[in-house]
Length: 172
Image (tube, rainbow, N blue to C red; front, side):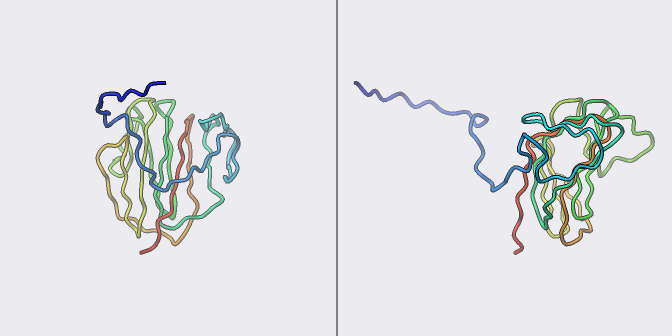
């Protein structure tokens, strides 16, 4: 056996995994263990959690959270499909850019492109909510929150969810 040292080759930044940030997965890929489903149509399908019901359904975690950070990948499968992520009285509406919104002002909404996967990362700490969508610009709001509550995802029309993660933020 011979051991040969290979030349150093740089690794591109997009090929390096991010460090462990303390998140834990809330969806096990098998069933809705740890969730309460309101409405028919929630289907665990391997790494995706699909909602095919009509017209809407809500998933709520059995666990309640205080300050938290979360990650949710969402795909809105039709132009008029939408979703909300909610906890502690804070509600984040998510719509596709081609959704027919009418005269509604979407200034505190997340607007995503097409029916592609979209990663929503948020942090709720002491009444301050910060969000990023697909790694893009940071949006911040001050929100009135309650002490603790479940994480809820509400679907209106067909959507897919994946990579649902949460981590609690210790009070400082």
